Length: 209
Image 1 (cartoon, one colour):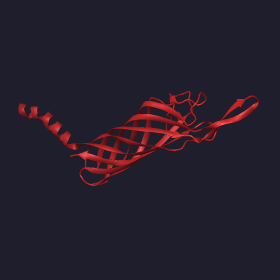
Image 2: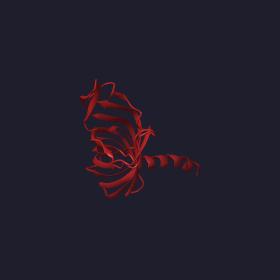
Image 3: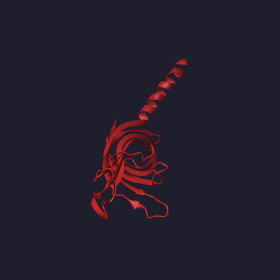
């Protein structure tokens, strides 16, 4: 009896380990940013493209259901339309240049999702992506004292993005997946313009089995 009790933790560990898969993934990230200012039309920024890369762990609860957690690195943000920069010289207002502003925040993301397998190789997922801002910056095409480049504290340290996604497995190792992250929550600090960011991720992955 004692031997059986001693073996139970080992058997439990082996069972959990057998149900858990680890892997890596990388792909394309496209973010869309806007300022949601009450009483005004939303200011839409141009989309920002970047990559994402990281690792995952998927724990199978059954043949149909699993839980997945990931650690990814990517960038989010947007680019404004070009606008004229003016200055007053004497009694005249002159155009000194044009400027477009790009906001960028580098993030470590921790997506946590529940997955449902419609078929053995095809699944849908939904969950929350917790984005931790590592650094944020603003870049202007017209760099001057009027529009300086450098770090910005526009974004909160932690952003939350609900998402829906799908995945298809080619075999036991390779898969493709895609997700859309909704812009439900304000990503900016309290005294900054309310900022909403939604983004799409699509890429390839490899599971170690």
